[in-house]
Image 1: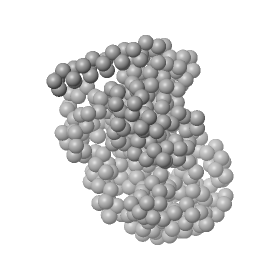
Image 2: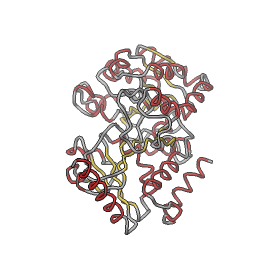
Image 3: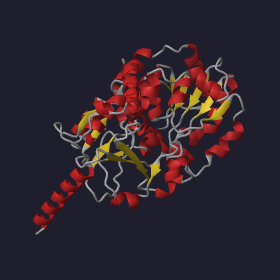
Image 4: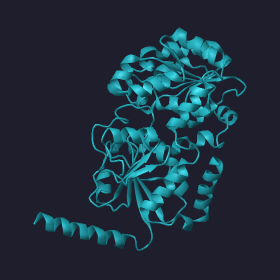
Length: 395
């Protein structure tokens, strides 16, 4: 009876799928935990949003009450409660974290990943990833790790080597340093330091952040403090229970320093001449700028964030490692004076971690069109323009 029921259910789903596609329209559900989860998929949404055949819908399956906050930098998007989404028909479900919204109707589930820092088991999964229908890998390293960990099979049809659409704008020339700084009210003629700690009660922000900022302000440079999305979350496990915006704002002199206002760190990476971090994915993304990195070594952070040892070594190999606020100051000054030190190492690691940056959005869109069973060459002129522009920038 169970086999018969499954066969009937499969037949009903196939019929429903064919019926729902008669008008040529496809619906994609994007799920997110934090604003940066949306940032990861945003370039693909932008590239396809002008196509009338594709409709994007957004949800926050784990914390629906935070949905407006999570998508606050995506005005006008259609947000649905996960209970409503569960009964809707979607052709694709996209997540950049290990989430799994409950959907009653058959859909293609796509994991696009976020970050390349090797934290929280992302690069050494202990559970199978075989339930995902597509895995949009950022690089070959992670793909190899998943195969070696037994999370997927080497010949899995789910594998797609796509790259990281989020970082295309760092290398394609669409962001201009001086324009970004001027928009922030900072002097483009001054060197700019970016302090971007990761989220954790064991991060450099919690251990020494205020002193680090105080010392950096003595340099007379611009200073951008980029808080992790979760560092704005007052729950103990994310921020240590500290309201960091309120704590840091009085320390930052107007016209010289500020807390970065947006979730997407990419513009601030382009604006910076030197970056200070502990162990964040953004530290690796900054390698695409080929500028000096100062790494604050936080052993407890590496332990609690379950950082893959290979990634801790990678970041150490391309940065100056320090352990105290005084050493941060000296290292930043050295980076400003000698920006080309470790350049060969930075380029080598960037090439390893980012598959063909500048054209990942185009590959992701092409893979999504394949899933949706749509000919992307029949997209509207506006959609084709966005895709062609992406390809031209990467050429």
